[in-house]
Length: 106
Image 1 (cartoon, rainbow, N blue to C red):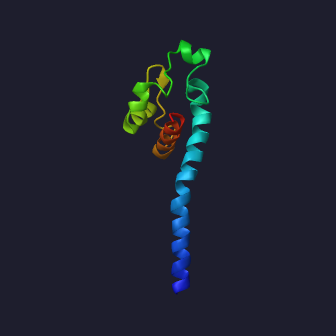
Image 2 (cartoon, rainbow, N blue to C red):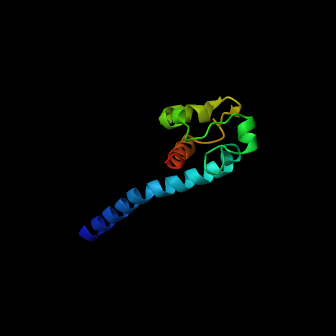
Image 3 (cartoon, helix red, strand yellow):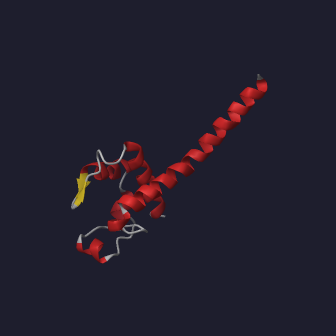
């Protein structure tokens, strides 16, 4: 019985440690599929299209200071020329993308 509980504890610990890595990977995948075409692979919005659409770099001070809730709302509801992704992405996918965007801001 103790060996089963120990094994269960090890599995649980492994899942808890690995979850953020999976989240970041899925956030990166979703970003590449849905966001990179406008915001750029690096989030700097340096393409001609991004400049024409006046898309800000994710490293712009205003976006660095933006809360996760603001990013989530913008992603769900849209902002400027960007259409919202409510109903197209799950809440978990949007949160994962926001977490990935935070890595681009570093």
